[in-house]
Every structure is written in C-alpha cells, then in structure tokens.
Length: 233
Image (cartoon, rainbow, N blue to C red; front, side, top):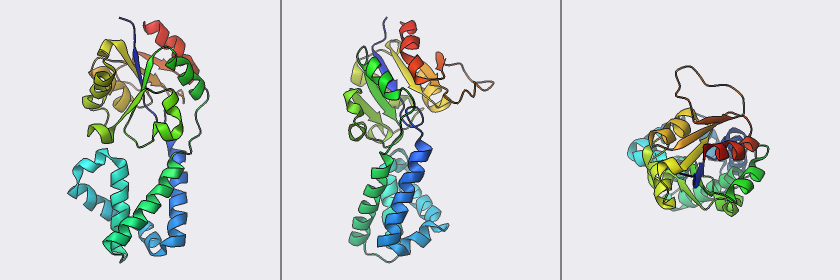
C-alpha cells in the first residue's frame, strides 16, 4: 500500500531546540530581573528544583504538558517570594508569554522548509511532538494538516497513544504511514512499535549505537527525505 501519512517530530528534527530554549530562558529571566527581581534569586538556587518536584508530585499528569507545568512552577515561584495567588498567576502568565515568544524564534535546519513544502504536495503531513511548539505560530500550518502533542494526548512519545492518535486522525493504517524524528527511542522505536515506518534523522552523522533496532531508513540531511520516502512506496 502506498504511503499517505508522514508524521514529523519537531524539536531537534527541524531545528536545534537546545539553542532555542536557552535563548527563551534568557529572555524570561531578563524580564524577571526587571519586573520581579525577588524571583531571580530563587531561579538561581536549588529552590526552583524543589518547587518543580513538588508540582510534579502533586500533578503527575503535567509531565506530559510542558506548558502547564512551566506555568504552574513559575506561579509557585512567585508565591514563594510573597506574591498573593492572583498577582502571582498574572506575573507568571506574563513571564511565560515572554518565554513562549522566544520558544518560537527557531532557526530551521538546512532544507527543512523546502523539504516540508515538497512533501506536503504529495502526502498528508502531521506534527507529532512532546514539546510545546505551535505549528500555527511558526507558520508551519501551511505544510502540516494537523498536530498532535503530548499535552493533547495525555501521553508522551514513545507511548503508542501518540502515534495511534495521529493515525486515527488521518484515517491511515500504520503500514501506510512513516514517522520522522531524531530520537531513537521516542521517535523510531515508538513508531515501529505500532507498525509504522520510521526514518531516523541523523544530522550529526553519529551512526546507530550497537543493540539498537534499525530504523526503516536513515538520513543525514533533510533534503534526502523525499527520495527516501518515495522508495518506501
């Protein structure tokens, strides 16, 4: 059967997320230093880690919703510095908005946009991410028909629910779909476990570690994807 659905991981598959998060965190801390300086000391101590541990213990399901988790941790940090709940929530929301503005300043890997444009003309594309990047905010909704996030599904990759949700939404069978990502467990093993094809994006040319189940295919540059996917048909 011909392939009809291609699902893409986003972070570290289409852009370097580490650089993005560092910049977004820096922007948020600069805002905090100007508007809520008392919280900065907490962010620079072990206190924030304690708050995070407490929040996760109280709300274990939030580990799949990184936006709500971050917002609640920031709110608790404000409260720990003496702000009343309503004021803490308002300040935390503004700080979170600053972070999210930076979160969406991404620098795409070479050929990422051109590859998405080429593939979207032939297949249904969907984003499948454990993170909180918004395809509409990034302007990627011109290529992706829909997105499934861990927050939406309530589970994170490599959980089968993530992949099955995308298949169900697209009305595609597993053998008629391929998932593309950089993480050998979350992306490759997760997709293969439900019967999907899986292409590993190895931009660093690190090679497969011993003992890892081989993906359907490996690419070292995003521009290789159209021809590799065509060969799977």
